[in-house]
Length: 623
Ligand SMILES: Nc1ncnc2c1ncn2[C@@H]1O[C@H](COP(=O)(O)OP(=O)(O)OP(=O)(O)O)[C@@H](O)[C@H]1O
Image 1 (cartoon, protein in one colour):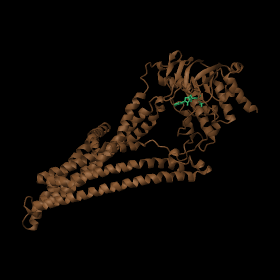
Image 2: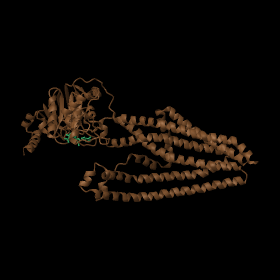
Image 3: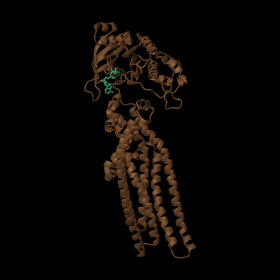
Image 4: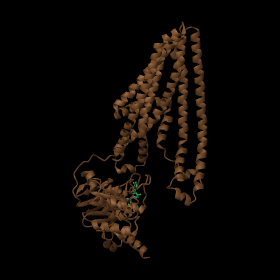
């Protein structure tokens, strides 16, 4: 079997975008973008905590100034020590410069501590500010945003981009520290002897260029390995996770998956090894050029010394300066790469926020407080999902009056859930209008309207909270009320089951946490129904509430639903047609179109699609 067919090309991971941008931009592109990224990092820091950002910036620059002082003081010390005269006198003469050197060194150390302290305080604030803005956006966008193929990917990358924000800030300050350090050395060297600046450049620039090129090759290597890492990630999930473990064993898939591993990894490892050799070659060439250049500088210094152009002290200081410059330069080259790559991740975050703004609900045209439900009317409503040729719901019109229990039935994919989601206000129709008490849904205050509707979705979520909280989530307008929670649970046949859990209603329903428990599919479905009952809503929408329930639980649930009839309004979606016999009206959908409607007896007499489905199902029970 060809691996490509089993493990086709996977989507790039979030971090690969930054890497790819780095490789594509090349060295010149990286430098062109640096000023914008530096400005962006400073802006984030400034927004999160002005005082700390100022402290870090000030300490970084001062620390550079101290480096200049330090080098100049070093030279003064050397001049005094190399001057003529008895040794004790020379040491005494060097003392003031030595004190200055010690002071500059100590101040630099102190400034480093101040910078670290301020940055540590800045980190949680930047993280919080950036993350909160993301969550404010992801929890506000319309549901339709999630239908877009790229949305989930963009969000994944954006959420990783939040982690890059503080890294970007820190690295920009590191970069600034490196640049200030370099300038400090340059200033000190010029003050000592202008010619030494040329020597300094010769000794450091070739090495720096080689380091940047090697960095470029390393990025390419990393990128080449990304396909391997993505596949490894998939294979790891298949071979090492709980969810796939039972099937892996029951079908004896171990050798098959290990075979896939060998194929994928064999090819990838060869590519990576080839690139690794190139990185080593570039680094080695860089090191040789750097070494030769440095020897040249030392030869130049020797010549200047011999000809008496510079004093011995200046030559010695220059050696110290070259070493300091090399240290700063390696910081700068490393940070340039890091700032660029993290800047790209952060760009993903900024871009996501910008793009998502187009998915935010329109500012409420009307903010009317909705009145108690009297009637819902659906007029000529259609919805077409993106990338779908035919509409999921096609020109449907119907009316539901307060107190009615109506059922939406039809085969898989006929549009029942989509129609219910539009009635619940979770999705906007592509065309047509849904009215609540005669006014379009958009006229009402969206939050207030939602509070009057309770929805048990087919694809319900398993919230990682206790059983009690899972039910109380149905209505967070007041404090959770235990007797009310238990009543809702009893209506959904969940009460006894919850009491049997190790900590009853206080059992945590998530195995990721210590002491957490998992429930069966049917047990979760009971909790979901209980949550919907807990919200005492005008309109209850239940989408396939009993697909995983045992007959006894199903009976309890439908009794509770029938108990609402005449008092509250219920929309029921189910394939178990025995449960819709008592509905006030049954709407039959087929390929998104409303093809029949009426009471059970009327539809049976009509002998249409509903009658066929019902008879088919009933025959199964009688056989
Ligand atoms: N988010 C989505 N994006 C694209 N197409 C979708 C989406 N949700 C549903 N569809 C498609 O819309 C059509 C109607 O789906 P819907 O879930 O409303 O049907 P249903 O009648 O509730 O089906 P079932 O009985 O299986 O629950 C189907 O063809 C389905 O594939």
